Image (cartoon, rainbow, N blue to C red):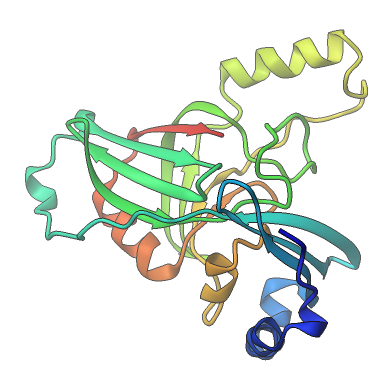
Amino acid sequence: MPGCNYKYCPIFAALLFIFLFSAKKVTAQSELQDVKVLQEYTDKKGNTVRKIQYTKDGKRVNETVYLTAFINIPRLPINTDTLIKDSLLVVVNKGKYAVQLYYRKKLIRAYKAVFGPKPMEDKCVEGDRCTPEGWYKICGKNSNNKYHKFLLLNYPDSAAQRKFTLLKDHHKIGAAARIGGGIGIHGIWKGGDDLIESRIGWTDGCVALKNEDIDDLFKLVFVGTRVYIHK
């Protein structure tokens, strides 16, 4: 299907105006400026493909996002005192822009999520703004982070270190490259939920949720909860 440039599409233009108005109010916190929807169309699989452009930290970023259908589930009350810690599993599905929480192999929560500007790429080096893939654990919980709440992951772990060393040995990354760290699941500034809904990859490699969703996840998981990140 042919792309629809927002300049010539009244509906997209109206939505863009609302989004830009909201973005201006949070520019100082979000470090995102001049957000533009360049093109939007539906692909053969029925996904909405949106090409956007914005400025972050003084650099112009071009990004393509895929607005796949999000399957929500009823958010039933859970007594955290009765949860068996080892039966919890957080699954980060980058392809579906989702974070899912399983308990005893049953899906009990699903949250919309965003990543960096290249969500389908695995993390290689510090500064590539990619989210690492593989098995990790929550190693810290911070309830007073600049992005509301923060669940720190144990990246880089030994598997990530081995992969990083192998990339260096094969000269796929520079000898002076560093592996990076500080990767986690966190919230967003007040008024920033539109970025989650629009799938805009504004993070530097972390997983970002709406604040109401990180609040919910934060109270259900523990230090030591397993996290699996995949495409």
